[in-house]
Length: 117
Image 1: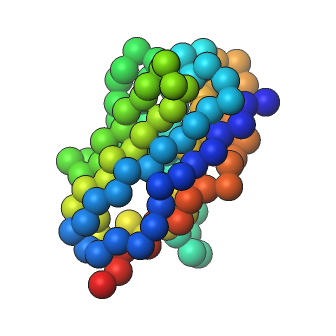
Image 2: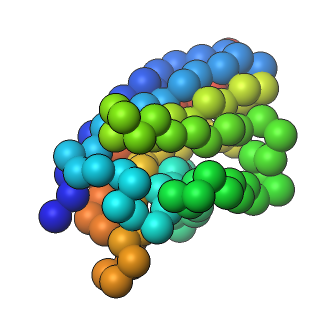
Image 3: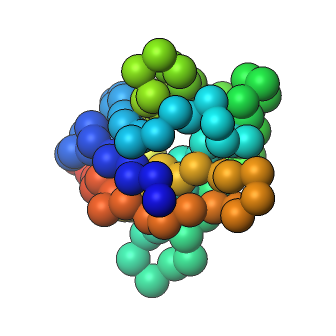
């Protein structure tokens, strides 16, 4: 099974930026897509960004225009650039890999993002 390790979270003021990284133990090009999810306390986990092996990206309206997902196939790493952060972006952020035959894989430990003044 693929192992994914997220990093880059932290405490940031409203309006600030963070870049999250997700390092994969397997070649990310072998997956149909890579995605970033988040889960706030008491809420369901939600998909906030995805990128296919062909480079197509998708975002929900809540983060569109502020978050950007990218991938570095050579480094087997996926990034999430988050700008204009809001307190409601506070959550644990997870990345995941969508396999062609088995769907989304196991979850990593996530990285905490806290937006607060």
